[in-house]
Length: 474
Image (cartoon, rainbow, N blue to C red):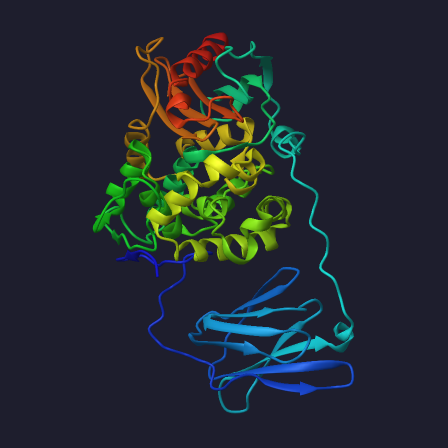
């Protein structure tokens, strides 16, 4: 279930090489009891390595090169059960303290061994949910300690712009494109990114293309599982077409297909590589809307949606990855029409159950300061090949929105808009005659205006505030 890609792998976590050999477990797991532990053994017919991802109640074992048949059942001990499929085995229940190891068989293959401590026989309770995530006061030292910036306080935003607002407008070093001077307003608060994160996906796709993983002419086929809400590209399309759709008209399905092609965690890895400690980018548009709609499955049940999303937003990275992957997989089973009705119908999330904290906890998030680094990143010399950089420049220049008319002469202006229920985000990169370069991020959340059309009507006002900041730096 997913998009079909020619000349490119598909994966939720990272791109994987497509295997032509089918390797599998030869039998259901065997269970043995010892004085201090239970031992669960899976017999595999080939030798491989393993990786584990754990949460408080699940243990996922990833086995590269293995293709396990789909099956699962209760193991009859400690409320443990297992599900296996593809290259993963997932244990659910009292998984704390399980030790995973392997033992090569004498002839071929190997045993995957799980030692479960008997101490877990005692009744246990799950750890309490983490404290709710606060959008303010997040750690902003990681980036600012690396590159001190001369800052100027922005004037108060125009009165029509209400709610939480953040701004970072920076003049960039002409060679490194790191901010050297900036106009700031709540620059280190975190905000939902809405569709502005799609520019990070485009950069990651072009990184893959430069690495030879696929080309702009490789094709993806839209499936029902991949469809997000609103208009979408039907049939089979090139990556070049989908990239333009994701930026120029902000198509959600095109973006999600590209996101899952480059790897669900690739945008997060890009942010991490730049030291962006307060940036979380690991969900597709369909995934975060599936959670908000109350259709998010195991980790995001509607009855405890606020607490569940708080747990996701404040979890450690390992648990966040597990929850994100599960949510994306769950979203594949949700039809786009049903999702839109659950979000925007008469009894939908936005009309009956909206909570700005749920928005913040489920959407991809960043601070104006950190995201401006991501805005400038593709233009840093050497990050992309010349052909990929030219494609990025051409595509980003088609994004919304720019002032009309332009307030000063420019050689280049690329931009991306994101809007939603009570939120708006505007990002851009500007080159002036003479070589001076600027980048900006404007975020607005919890606006008094709820309708998306009303939010879009505020774009010219927000752009005027942004260009005033650029003029201050000029």
